[in-house]
Image (cartoon, rainbow, N blue to C red):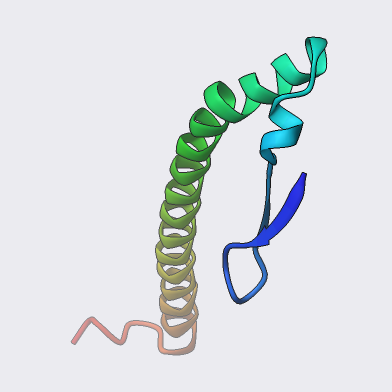
Length: 86
């Protein structure tokens, strides 16, 4: 496998050379199978996982913000009892 930079920041992905996919026997077959069949599936599932990760982070941020606001409102009610009743 050869290393080729795909992202200037940090991502390095591995790709099979034509010599490696032409290996005789089972090893060559499995290397070719991984490159042709499994790699596209992996890439699709990886993109979906990244989308779910982004969604999870967004929901977590919203929930923690609302939880913090609820705790602060409860504290304000203890500090200023009956502040809303006049």
